[in-house]
Image (tube, rainbow, N blue to C red; front, side, top):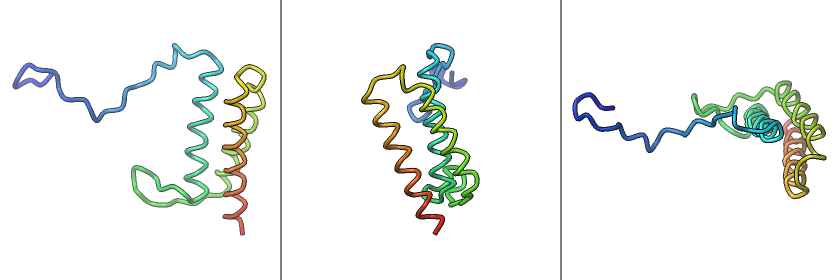
Length: 104
């Protein structure tokens, strides 16, 4: 609450937190995959760090993130729908191709 007007503060621009305790294990793993993929894109050098707005390429970290994503997708693929698996496999392929391009 805003102490001067006794009205709730405007929180339109604030992200809504996710209650991870309400997610089942497969949703939680998918969340981890999305977090890792964002890190992979940053470490590949194709996205800027949102806090510094700078590119910080670190291909070793990108490789670790991609390997973790592959392992996580392998673990959950028999328990999520086919369309979602196709989307995750495409994400992995895109990351691998861009990683290879940056290695040149």
